[in-house]
Length: 82
Length: 225
Image 1 (cartoon, rainbow over the protein chains, first blue to last red):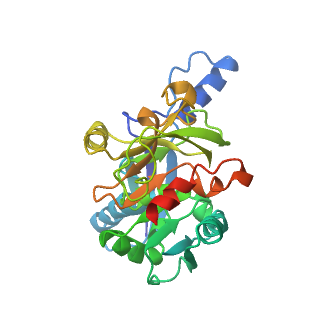
Image 2: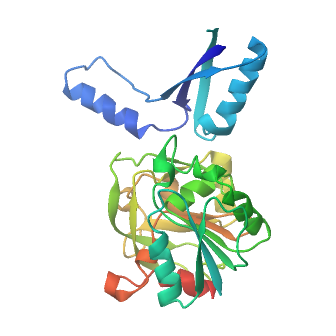
Image 3: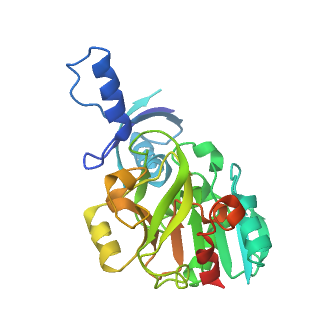
């Protein structure tokens, strides 16, 4: 079994209304040192695969087809044997 | 004229759409559950608003994999009219039947109010009986209507006259103040290349009779007849 931890972020070119609002809220709490925030998503996928390469390619497929919207989001992931 | 209204788990404007089309416009309307793999023989397909699959993952992201969506894509591919309203528009974007994507509203709040929408293009089956430049009072109700797309897509939409509706003032001026969600260039509705698939955030079915404060959405249904 493998465990993939996937991070999804909005593409750099895409505005993040949520991040902007959270940044503003941090500012009002006194965290003026926070200069930028991007809100993203996190997935943990446990999967069965014959090899790490297979697991990697299946995770990529999952990300491309469902877990992310390639029009606005980028992803990266980390794979471990579990 | 026959229409099918697709019902996903979490759709909540399906009955409103059926009411507008059948009781007001006298079309024959059938509801089609998302698990069906075929459509009845209809002229028009409506993807209604709501919160399909609870908006899990991303709005419209799960609904696009419903069995009925293959038949809906085929209907569109055959050149027949397909309209996605609000969540239906979000489903069309996720399904790749229209380009671009939705982001959270600029205000990050759910916005529910009547807005003015300027008709940008009347060379479509959905707007052919409306005057170009007319402003329509139609309500919106969404948390993710902040339409975005890359520059190439935007230029194509613009060059091919595929931006059908823009948010505007009553007099037709477009500016940030009259844009309720921050959408790119005030876009409220776009059409596909073949000009038979329309996605729009405003709800014409909720503005199809005077008793509901505005009959302005009716022109869209009348254009289809």
